[in-house]
Length: 112
Image 1 (cartoon, one colour):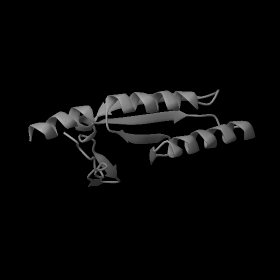
Image 2: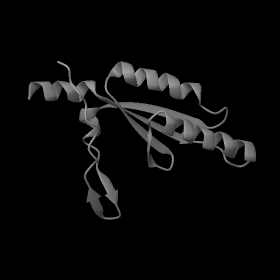
Image 3: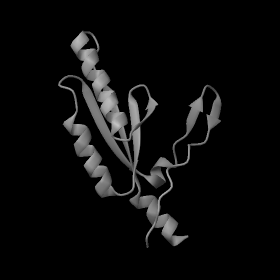
Image 4: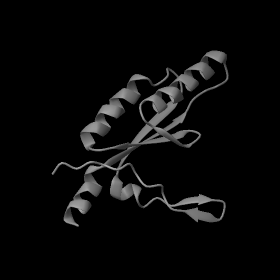
């Protein structure tokens, strides 16, 4: 039980929020490429402009943050938020008036 509680504070989730311009063909191409780069890096689309990713540790989260920073388009706003697995478990999702539990995170192999 103690090990489970500690992991809840070591496992991290990254959220990427963005608002990118799509008025010109070049802007749309860059926005599409940014979304595709997020998917290639293991992010999942939570909403149209919100992507999230599970990270096994804070160090892994920092690596992915640097990677996201490397493919941010030249225009628009991109925000990155890091939360612990414990905080992530407190999210409430609603589809209309109906509430749904969060999907379970990926299984992690623990060596110790």
